[in-house]
Length: 148
Image (tube, rainbow, N blue to C red; front, side):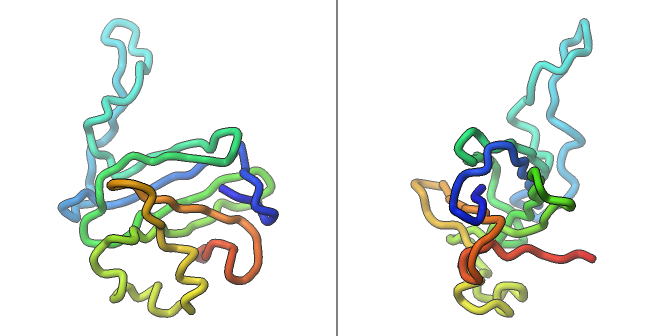
């Protein structure tokens, strides 16, 4: 997560929403494990697919989402929360190796430099890098979606 000068934003939150690999959008109702005696949350089970995740950025603005490939769409829907934003921001992270990128209606409408801000870059086996830039020049700032 980067600001307009390219510096990392250390206190942002990224939410991800996506369908399961089979394209279903129901997901498990939750993956929190609770202590059977006290009922206290003891962590996620890391197995149940919920279709939703939330992570914070670290001191350098980095964040990591671990998930399954989405089915039926070539992207993850992302919502960004950060200090200084009056409203959260919506964007998409299109997986660079996903089928259907050439047929996506949103990507087709964007000029190539703007489109590039929505497509992940390879960063190792089964790993995608996606930089979210909150401000910047026309070809640097991530494309954000308006659901007004």
